[in-house]
Amino acid sequence: MRIAFDSRPAADPRGIGRYTRCLLDALRSTADDNEVVESARPRRGADIFHAPWIDGVRVRSPCPQVVTLHDLIPLKRRSEYLRTGMRFRLRYMAVERAARVIVPTEAVAGDAIDHLDLPRDRVIVIPEAAAPAMRPMDSAAVATVRQRYALPDEYLVWVGGLEHPDPRKRVQALAEAPRDMPLVLVGPAKQWAHELPDVTLTGQVPDDDLAAIYTGARALVLASDDEGFGLPSVEALACGTPVVACDVPALREVLADRATFVGHDDLAGLLATAATARRPAPDPPDWSWEDAARATWDVYAEAAAA
Image (cartoon, rainbow, N blue to C red; front, side, top):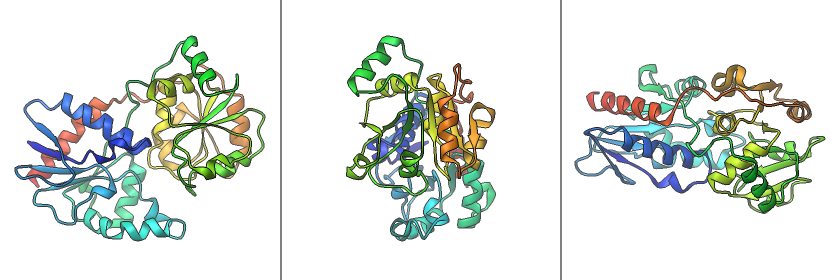
């Protein structure tokens, strides 16, 4: 098979970029006699076009189209995501015509079936994984990032995009909640994030630095009241860092007993619990990007046959 893969989101520093970069590398390493060509649109001679993000979905495709949906937040919470919901309306209609739709969890599969009226056999769950760079780092690497980013000796860490406030991530509420341990926010940030009270911002960091920041943290905190997968959680576990999260379906599905969960309305409890976390953290789920790539090749074969 010849796959046209829309690699444009690979430049995104957030989870969608991680997904695109890691999956593309793994697809190439497991391609056998198949071929992957980077293209923003279906190419002549392609057997499948894969849009790994909602922005890449084609309303019309001359070959079968596979789409990855990371979540359906704009459809589930229209009042909070009004502008993005309007932008995605046509694209969601195109998703309904896709030969196959890949989602990271059964929670998102249920949302896709409920909100897009997709038949269950066209929605395929393929989990994500920690990148190979996410691993426990030695004390020298931890000391280096502590100095480089002016990190405190003890801290809790949150990882994600801070370009604009995301209602479901609840970063502002997390920053304003009472806590006894410093909070470090990692990710590309705009001005609003710099106005958050009593937090340390690192900005975007390279993968090795991120692994060291995870390794040096007391725990990763996830304050989201909705998630599609929660990729930072498996990254943190891969670095040996405990995870404390609000109890939402996708995170419970991905992490099971590997994380400590608190009620999604108790951010003070989230921070207090994280401050008492102890290593060693459980191992991350036994699933690699190579596993994800092989499952994705199976989806391509199904889409081509369909």
